[in-house]
Each structure stands twice: as C-alpha cells, then as structure tokens.
Image 1 (cartoon, rainbow, N blue to C red):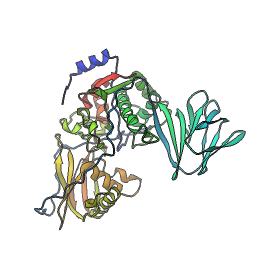
Image 2: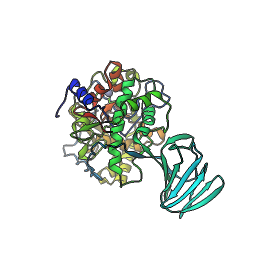
Image 3: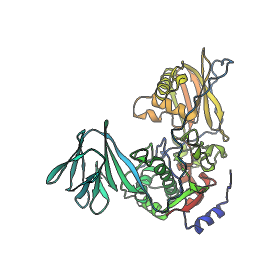
Image 4: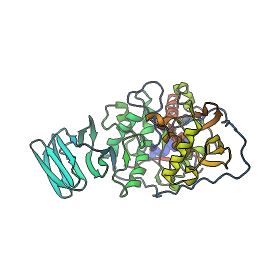
Amino acid sequence: MAGNEGVATWMRRCLIAACGWVVAASCSSPSAPKEVPTKAAPPVSMDRQGPTAPVVAEAPSPEPAKPAPAPAFAPRFDPPRPAPPKVEPTVRVRVGTRLRKPQSFACPSGEFTVSVGTERWTAAAPVRVTATGTGWQVAAKGGARSFAAGPLVLKPIGKASIDWDGAGWPGVATLVALPEGLDVIMDVGVEEYLPGVLAKELYPQWDEDAFRAQAVAARSWVLVEESRWEGRRHYDVTSGESSQAWSGHTRNARAREAVSATRGMVLVYQGTVVPAFYSSSCGGRGANAFGSVTSNPEHDIPPVRSGDQPARTGCCESSSFKASANYRWSATITAATVKQAIREYGQRNGFPTWAGIDLPVAIDIAQTATNGRPIEYRLRFKDRNPVMIPAAKLREAINGGIPGEGGSRTLKSDDFTVAATPKGLVFTGRGFGHGVGMCQHGAQATAKAGKSWEQILERYYPSAQCVRAW
Ligand SMILES: [Zn+2]
C-alpha cells in the first residue's frame, strides 16, 4: 500500500489544505445506532471477528473432486471515482418508496411552487398530491389543478424545508410516479443532509471526534454515490440502512457541530474521492470493499482494503460494545433453510449452480484475506462436489431466506465459522455489518483513547488524504 503516511504528516497536510478528511459511509448492512440509543448496539454496518481462528466443522469428509467454480459477478457499471467537487453538490435522497396513497406536504412559509416541466403553480399548503396514472392531481388550500405526467417538483417558497410523513426534511421534493407507486425524493445540499445521517448512525453520547470522523466518511461516501447515479437513476441514495440512514432535520447538536467543523472535507486517494464505506463493528478484522460491498474495480484501493490490513487491536473489542451480542454472536439455522435460501438467491440472481444446490452437510472457510477474515466459503454435500460462495454473497443469500424483519440480521456479518449439529448449522460469528472501512464502534473506542478525528480516519482509511473540497 502506497504511502502510509504518519499521523503528523497527514495532519500537516490537512492543516495546510485547511481541510478535513472524510470517509464515506456505506451501505450495507447497517445496524447503526439509532437516534435513541441504548446500550451498545452498533451503529451502521460493520463486522468483527473473533479471537481464535474459525474452526469450521468438518463434517463428513468431502469428495476428492474439484469444487465447482464460483459464479463471476459482472459489475453493472464501473464509473470512475469523482474528483472532489469545488462547489457543494446536492444529493437526491429517496425518502418515500413506491407509495400507493396520495401524499400531503406542508412547509414553513405555507406556500409551494408546484411544477411539472414548464407548467407552474403557486399553491397554498398543505398540498395533497395524487398520481393519476396519466399525470397528477394536486389539491391545495383553496384550489386544485391537474398536471401532465413527469417528475413533479414541490419547491417551498422561502426556506427549503418540507414537512412530510411526520418529519421535517431539508431541501426540495421531487415526486416520481412509477407503475408500482410513488417515490418521494428530497434534493438537498450535502452539508444540510449530513447532520441527519450522523444522528441516525451514531449514538448521541459518543465522542465528538467519532462524530467528526463519521461526518468526513459519510460526506465522502455520498459524493461517490452522487457521481455514480447521476443520469442513471432518479435518486442517488435512500434514507434507509441500505445507504446511510437519514432522519431529515435533526436537533442533535453534536451531529450538526461535527458537520460544521468538517465542512467540505473529504477523503481522497490519488486525487479522487474515496468511497469511504463504514460499518458498525469489524469484530477485530476488516473486509475488503471489492468483492464484498462493491464490484467496481475503481473501489479496489488501499483505503478500503481493510482485509489487507493487519487484524485490529484496540478496536471494537476495547469498547463497551465487546459485551454485546453483536460483537460475538451465534445463529442456528437448519440445513434445509440454508439450502432453500441459496436456491432462491441463485434463481433470483441467475446463478444456476446455486439454484440447484443440495442440502449442505458442512460449510467451511475456503479462502481468507490477509488478516484472516473469510472471503469465501465452501459448502459440502453428501453426494455432490463442493460449491464455493463468496462470503458476502453467502450472508446475503441466507439472510434473504429468513422470513420476518429480523431475517436480514440473522447472520450479523460474513465473518463466521459453521458447525454441523443435530439442531442445525450453528454459525458463530464476529462483528456486525460488512466490515469495510471505518469500524464505528472502533472509532468511538479510538476517540475515547484520546485520538483525534483525523487520527481515526487515518487508522481506518490508510493512505487516504483529507482535503477540503469546498
Ligand atoms: Zn472494529
């Protein structure tokens, strides 16, 4: 890895550039701390690993034959990483998805400009918007009007802030009618967007340096997403955990301060913005971005090759989080459930080998990253050749096959060992989330140990520089 600069050098660069750092958060299995935190749950997405090497139950001995090759994951597109923008961009955040019912909006001034294409109307709030199938019907205080089909923009007159769905949202709303329902997207400046991310991603009592590191990470990550989706999709990120969780407006003073103190600061590597993924807990060893949370080779860069870094000490195991069921966890799942989940996943995603698998009699680790974290598992069967499945895909497939809201968190990370028992396959795992980039619980522990937010970022995004973009 190139240029593992010392902290002093790094900090000097930041100061010279009057800058900050950033790391984008990521997405993926987040379990981020909620606005009303409690004990020691993890914030966003992360992972962990355990002290001892995974010992996978070697069930009935495998056949000598060669394992079937894992399917190739073709990237859908590989946009280059963007240069840091000189002007603060806006980001399109989808806050409502496939809504079937009419939606009502209000705003502080009580007036909106409603527009579709070149059609415009000044409407008194509240306005109620219905997608009619051929266009829009907008009912306002004192009148109603129809609009042709096309994205409908609700721009508050005066302050760009909208009351919708029981919360306040900064920005301007765009409504997009789709066959499955109505999407609501807020178009908001990055700096106005970020406080509501931090409020959702971190516990309010956490250290201000953890907040500032998170602000830089979240800013960097969203810049990469904004660049990635421009012209390809009608939104850049969602307000849920699949992106960065977002609360809209927040009164969380620590979140607002952290964003303000790091205004415009982003993490860059070789002149372009780092996709600063982060997650709740690495469990002691991070994961590589490429192959787990991204298939874009542009993202295969040292700052997010956590799996190539040494196993971590003084990370999430040194915080109170260590005692939680998210630092070390276990889950028992029947082989039949695993089989069915992988079959369905294979069918949905076009992987015929997975779509036809038998009942697994054992799952063991086929390949690990430099730091020991599994990156590929081998499924063994009674009468068939083993099948290899990348770690992140196996977790995604199995969680997707567990019914109910908790299904997606049954396997809390893709770092586990598996033992075959009479009750089923027992997964014993480390950490919470995908484990790429910054470990949020580790960031808090690092801050508590007296390190600055710049040092936290240097730790979790080695080789990245922190610069002020705007
Ligand atoms: Zn950690």
